[in-house]
Image (cartoon, rainbow over all chains, first blue to last red; front, top):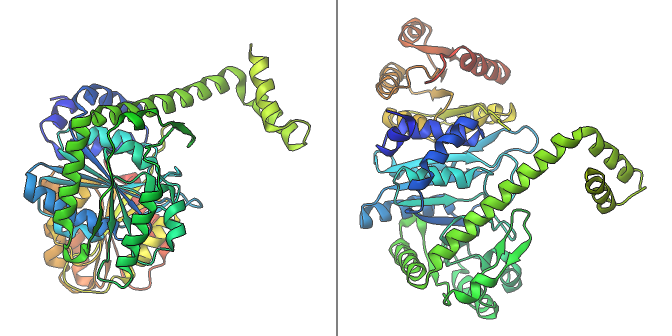
Length: 330
Length: 137
């Protein structure tokens, strides 16, 4: 059997090996993924994001249990933790909170280090998600690096983005300015047994009421790219749920909300639109990387350094340097 | 564009509740540029083998202080073999009596560390074990 056939037949070791190749940006991994790509597009992708310590891993653990119990479909979990910017090493500890999932062959947990990428995901997370999708996992849960205000890459990768807040995470101004809230399809105030939970719910409610109902789409470099799709998408008001993930409270309601959002996306055509946004972003990102590589290859590193020298000595601005690099190319 | 990173699983099988040592090792490996998957306390051999498979790690480090190593380690090795991961090096740390060491090594444990081992020695042993491991299919 080829690697593709083994993965499609449910060989977990073969899948695990492929995920490593993808993470290492290995050419043979990408060619396997290319063969698998026609089989993607079936899984419901759920992003889980929130501040460090808000309870993402614990919630993912409970959510996976409930999805298994209720739908019977298989669940893949991609848990991203930060790499040290100094050593490149990483301590990936999300499994600690996912012990309840051990022993279920229908659950596959993969820890990923961010490997220097910003935005809350690793550069290859989307490709890893594709591999799980092609391997037939019905649900893919993507847990981001502990994120704050701007790490909203997940909104482009997932169909349904769940944002977790813990009580006393800041006043209502924090709630208004946090870009991450606009990425939310479902909001969860976790640790709702702590004081301040109702205040957190109220702050989120008022922030949502103020928010214009649009869904921004970020391009590869984090610029706001288009909001055109949003107006066509029928309005979805993100529900605000309370949960105590350690006790399993509020998890059934969370699955209800995720399923409702999934149905909403299917009915309104939002699912295809989000797929298109996501894949467009992926194509643009790769295009940018390839163009840059081709450019540097054709010009050599030397010209680049000369241009950098002129910027360092303040003879030209960064923009001028780039313009002259591009002009010299023609 | 290829970037290969070492991935190492650190796990604590059995019932003892002291994971200070495991955390020190995890931290030292991380500081050496390695990606460490830490499972936490009270793992069964089945949980450890399954985590090693899903995470496709290059090596496994077990920390055992309870004295149950002669039961736990052979079981982990057997499970790894059963799932086609016999070539993944397994290293052991904790309180391991000298008389048990030859038998554990015979069964396939790559290295065993007792109290007083420096973290540098542990990091070096992991790197060496991965370098010596058979290539994976």
